Structure formats: C-alpha cells, structure tokens
Amino acid sequence: MKKYLALFGLLSLHSIGLQAQDAHYSQYFVAPLSINPALSGFMDGTARVMLNYRSQWSSINNAFNTITASADGIILQSKIPTGDRLGVGFMAMSDQVANGLMSNNYYSLSTAYHKSLDKEGNYSIGIGLQGSYATRGIDGSKLQLNDQLDLYGQFSQTSNDAARGKSGLQRNYFDASAGILFKAKLNDNNQFYIGVSTYHLAAPKVTFMDNVDLSVPLRVSVNGVYEAKLGDMLSLSLLGLYTKQEQASEGVFGAIATIGRSYREYDPTPIFYAGVLYRTQDAFIPYVGIEHWDIRFGISYDYNSSALNAATKGQGAVETSLVYLLRIPPNKKIQYLCPNNPKF
Image (cartoon, helix red, strand yellow):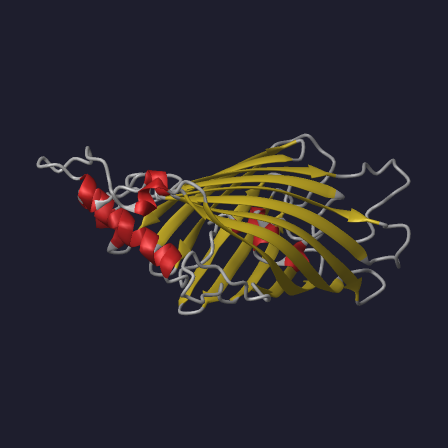
C-alpha cells in the first residue's frame, strides 16, 4: 500500500501541478538536442546518431522510464563560408511515468548555424531553433483506486470510478525552443564552450480538466564544458548544466577523464572514459564509457545522497547511452573546416 501512495505522490507532482522538471538525463552530454538546440551539428565529425535510456526509481513500480533516439549532422558545407557550420537534427523522446500510467512523447526538428569569428575557426557563435510536436496521455485502465481495495489491502475489487475505464485520455500540442552557443579554442591544449537555451517558448496549454487552464512553464538552461589536454593519451573535461523550470531547479556538475587518444584521430585504438557527476542536493553519479571505431557506449548510476534515499530503498537511476560518430576520412575531398570540438 505504501508503494502505491508514494507513486501517487510522485505522479501528482509530475503531472497535476506541472511544476516538476521535464524528463532529463544524467548523461545529458550525449543527449544534446534535449538541452540546447544550438548543439545541433556541434561535433567533431560530420554526423552522429545517439540512443539514451534511463530507468529511475524502479523500486516504486517503475516510476520513470525515458528513452530517446536522436541524430544530427552538418549539411551544405560547400555552400557556406569556410569555418561556418550549418547543423540539422531530429529527436524522438518517450517518457513513461508510473509504469506507463502517464506517457509524454516528443518529436523535434532542430537547426543551428555556427558562425566562425576568426579565419582559423577557433572561435564561433551558434544560434539554434527547435520545433516540437508532443503528446501527453493517461491510461486510466492502469489506475489503482481506493474502492478496489479488499479487506486484506489488495487491489482485487472492481472500481466504479469513471476514470478507471478511460484508456485513451490524451492532449497534443506544438512547442518551440531556442538556444545560443559560444565556443573558444584557446590553444592546442585548452578549449571550452558555454550555451544558454530556453524551452517551451510557445507556453502550450496541457491539461486534462476542462475547467483548469495550465501551460507548460519555460525551462531555461545554461550548459558548458572546459576541456584540457593533459598529455598525448589523457584529457580532462569539466562540465556542468544548470536548469530552472518555474520553482524547480537543478544543477549537474562534474569531471570526466578521457584515457587513450585525448583528441579524436583516425585510429582504431579504444578510448576509455571515467568520471563522476553530482546533481545538487540529490545524487552522486559515477560514469564510465568505452569508444571503439567511433562508437561510444556509456553507463552511469545515480546514487541518491538525499533523504529521498529511504523512499527509493537505495535504488536511484540507471542510464545507458550509445553514440555513433560519422567522420569523413582525411583522404576524401570534403574535409573538416573547424578545429576539434569538445567531446562532451
């Protein structure tokens, strides 16, 4: 019984008040289109494909499960000034709450133009836009209500509540987002970028109650990375993301070491990643990854450090990611016109 009460509380915060944050990833650095449209086409390559999966609080009836598939790339390279980049991207995200009781699905198209500020392309500024189509639904057949309880505390009775029989309650809406990104390569060993983005610019109305007028609040994010080459086989990335959506806010900060080729080269030698992140007042997040032939697999785990640890029985969130980076080999006519970009 306590499990379902806790689940009801989580669902209430997530859906009715609409003040909880959007679905998010601890490995946000490999889900770039979900944090800043200006990251479209911002990569050390020509195109990339990314898959992300997050399972959070599985001890509370699979409270949150999120999966994202995205792809972006650089287009019209021969048609724009040397050093500039035009990126396009697509993202599909599905966020399932309370074992599928509530579902949120997003389909987004994005574009970004990165303007070089010097002849070498060491400094650039990018502006990105994103349009989204989203659906939010509740499957009433998965509700477990008070009148279903029997004398033994089991949900074995038939409910008379009309909501229990609704299996297709759904709202659809369009949305828009925008972002800006500044990158600087200071020298051969140091570079950084910082970006700002705003989501839900259209303030879409999303409510299942006819007499209530609720809209999705703006989500503002600041993200950045500082990458330092420490040796031929080692680099260190300091990264962070701060997000605020109405009264909810969070920061994720940490460091990840790249062991192997500190900058991408055309070499089959495996690259290893190891680091730790911290979500403010919530969780420590160890991360490890391996990359071979431009395919990177990463896994992380959110270990709750807050009082929430008691409610979740010590089970935080598991995340996995898979990234494929396509690069035009040096012997082809089309070359990269920008210096290496940070890997996170």
